[in-house]
Image (cartoon, rainbow, N blue to C red; front, side, top):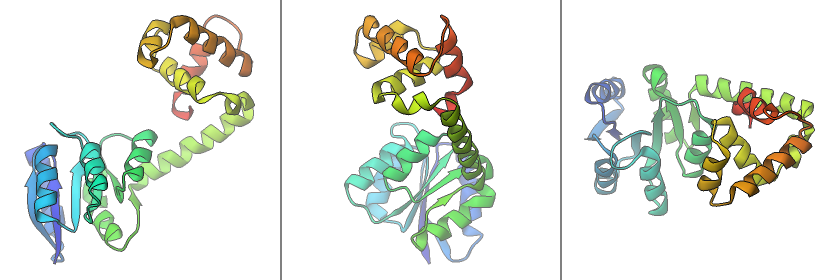
Amino acid sequence: MISVLIADDHPIFRKGLCEVIEHDPLFRIVGQAGHGEEALRLVMELQPEVAILDINMPKLSGLQVARTLNDRQSATKLVLLTMHQDEDLLDEALALGVSAYVLKESAVEDLLAAVQAVLVGQTFISPIIAGLLMKRRKMGDELRREKPGLDRLTPSERRILRLIAEDRTTKEIADALGVSPRTVETHRQNMSHKLHLSGSHSLLKFAFDNKHQL
């Protein structure tokens, strides 16, 4: 039987996940955790073949647990549960060795398929997320055709543009990046020039309208 550990801070949801997994006689739940520290301890102690981790847990997040297990070269395959259809979180999870990324709202339909996939060395992403990412990337490609100057933005300018899309002020951006407000304003001017934007609020509007493609 395949050993599985489940970590989620919501007992009722965790119970539901256990029922989904145990519905298949090939799998056996060997441990449960209600927060990240407990999950990390149990994975190291029990060494299950698969660990299913909620991305948002007290004490340690699923990503923090995954990062530690990756550093310790754990052989346990990781499945991350998330409520977020977020490309950056997905990229970070995959970089940390997470084998599957499952949207909570479709966990009942996707979880067994995800566990089965990771056991044979495959990567699994919930179809809802995969479809959304494909749509966003297509929109991103279209945006870059319309605004070729996007590819000329420096990494610092891209980061500032994403912060602008979060409705951060110049001072808030400067504080977050550890630079002066004048430096942020210079970057704003350079980005407006590269993107052929004019007007005092044009860069802000552009960032808002395209925040998922930046």
